[in-house]
Length: 171
Image 1 (cartoon, one colour):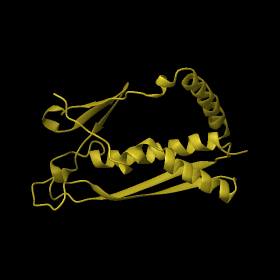
Image 2 (image 1 turned 180 degrees about the vertical axis):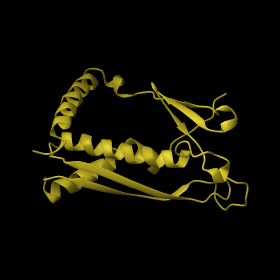
Image 3 (image 1 turned 60 degrees about the vertical axis):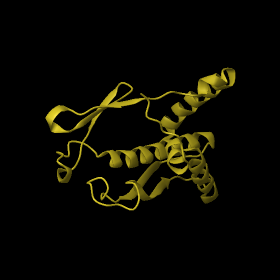
Image 4 (image 1 turned 90 degrees about the horizontal axis):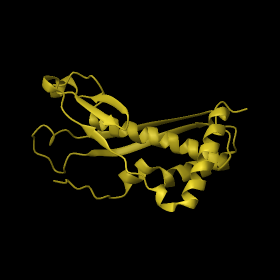
């Protein structure tokens, strides 16, 4: 028995229901999601609201922050890690693979020059993003390789970072 069997059984039922809904109403497969943030007064911390959840992002003391929460770039990497883990769970269900554990570690490099007003060659962005997926399963190495491939192809955050998307400021 795999450690995540009970969770994967619940996820199997939910995915089956979603697939039935999407088959009956294909337009229901597109979700609109939203995040809202502002500055919290003199602290400079930035509360973020996503759905019914709230959390704090902040800068490190080197940028006048108080390290009350992750930085925005750290949160982006954390979102990628979380989405990849979730995608592995979904793929395990879709492929009917046993799964004991999944851990994804994401790293990247950020040149802060432009952020702090120094000359820069490229607009500031996180570069050299890499991840390592640690999958513990009794599935065959071939099945695990298929799961890695499927996760690569279907992770929404990974695909958003990999392929250009339009981002527009609206008035």
